[in-house]
Length: 486
Ligand code: FAD
Ligand code: MLT
Ligand code: ZN
Image (cartoon, rainbow, N blue to C red):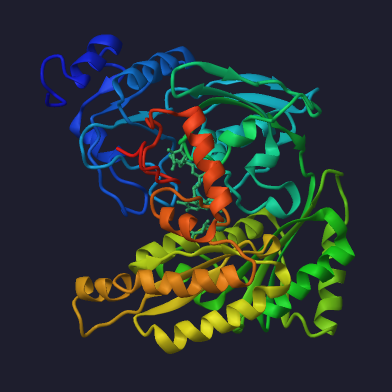
């Protein structure tokens, strides 16, 4: 029977849940049918917009009974194609956007309970309103949702001090594939009562169930801050500078981001209003920040002293400290807008890799040489969360005025598999990861199959079968399982 015919799954969904929950409006479907990077264009059966955990539960029980594939969607900002339905017209996109209630704020316990559809920036603001701090921070925070952050175990710019999303969670509420609700929404810091199930859902990218709410850790709000934009001669100096800063400032270091000169050029070219913090040129820069919860701490002096020692040691060639919140925002504007500037500049390939810090600079040098020598179609834009050993080793299309823009676009993209193989193999040989913070989605399923051990894959598949025996949850993402894939 056709999806749209009488008695069809779509008709049954509408009859059961009503047209305010099951949306078939073409323009709303167009927005959810494609992922952020436009890597995958699908065709959803419909868009479900539940308002409560009970409604998510009924929807999943219904879809499980009818074997309808369900694609959870948050802000749709993730990079690996995890949110796009396939093109069969039989999968239901389930957006959490209506479930955006702050269920509990508990400053005494330093915790809060939020629904999965809350926008990350709103979660940060709610914490700030009671004088607390929720440290997860990334360029997409104005539109990504906490449910998406949890499901991708997002990283961002504060990991060096506070950890990944996983480290910020006390408990979860999850609707399982068959509709049962697993609630571990406690706000405890200590609870050693058997297997810790919440961690299976964090980073599962919607393949094991739908996260509907989370109990999150809060921290004392930073009340003193110092931010520096620093020119360094090599990427190796940047790594050494991190060590120097930690020696001088200990665990006050909360962000440590590497920025190449080419990224600054891109931001200045594509985003009017951006201000370059330092005069002169340097191949590399570091944006670093130290913070303290104590008021009126002389952090500027401390950071200046650390940078002066690094200048003396030849690790730094120039540096400036933000003299106002406005200047601090200007520094961060450059860093946060690199992905947008890259996007505006044309097609690009993304490699979200991590390496042990002692191997990072050697990797940048050798893989950078390889790109310069072997990939005339592209140029390297390597930046990111060096404090965590995480590089966005991205390659942008070289402008080629001889070819038409579309022919030029094809040139780099047509070599993506070959380029990815060389980069990821090298990362793997050095003990690194081919996906540090962006996940697997649909885009990196083959990479996971290549680099995970057979035992890891066997155990992951066993977990998938246990939680989702009918394979309805985000089919084809993260893992391919012959008997489950649809
Ligand atoms: P979506 O894209 O909607 O979904 C992501 C995955 O989670 C999908 O597989 C989806 O099916 C699943 N999912 C979503 N909600 C739920 C739910 N409630 N229950 C179960 N499964 C669900 N990422 C980083 O880690 N660090 C960065 O620094 C960073 N910077 C970025 C900067 C920009 C400008 C952009 C555009 C993206 C950036 N990202 C970064 C990637 C992205 O923002 C993160 O992966 C984010 O966590 C995704 O959240 P989302 O709500 O958009 O999730
Ligand atoms: C970032 O840190 O800005 C993103 O995770 C990287 C990217 O867009 O490639
Ligand atoms: Zn990142």
